[in-house]
Amino acid sequence: MVLQNSMKPIIIHIPHTSPRIPYYDGFVMDNQTIQDEINHLTDWFTDELFDLPYPIIVTPFSRVFCDVERFEDDSQEIMARKGMGMCYTHLDNGELMRDVGPDLRERIRTDYYLPHYRALEQLTSELLYKNGHVTIVDCHSFSDVPFNRDLNKDTPRPDFCLGVDEYHTSEDLYLPIQKLLINLGYTVHINNPYSGTMIPMKYYQKNKNVKGLMIEVNRKLYMTNSNGVVSKTQSFESIRELIKNIFQVLEDS
Image (cartoon, rainbow, N blue to C red):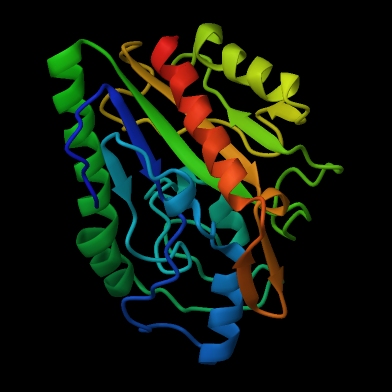
């Protein structure tokens, strides 16, 4: 978790940028296969793209180890059926990657999932109390080629996806951003290929003063991933500047 000094009523949440695996208990694949999966699924460089003067919470471990954006109860999590619940068990190609028994699952939930979730909830509560409202911006990137397990495999994919929630995302929150991007020549989809946004359960569907918006950037706009080597392209800085402009629109809305 990283908290900036500025305490404006906007929270930047970056859940999938880290490639770190805290420990390898339960994994049945060799380390290279695990690293290839991390390379495949990580939202590379989003911690740099969204490095802005707002309170920031960055997940310090890989989604392959523990995905803080999933429901902790697999029976409530649709992606758990594909081996991508709170604790990933399968590779994107469907092969078994990790055997997660009850004890290991509880250890990961207690030591990693819950502390991250509580930090986001606490920060949300603090800013809500101080300002009367707060906006959580859930920051991601996505592959231009759908993953095997993606629920939405429609192509071509847009340059940007804005994830909205009917209860927590008003039109005046996302429409100005959509307009900005379209006017600059980018394609923008709403809730496509990914939908929704991160809201702590304490406030989910209960408090409209907790607002949420997911911003997903197509990785083709700022990076390459070839033969396991990830690197920024020359357009990285211009996309980072564009994201600054997006947040200025959020400030003004």
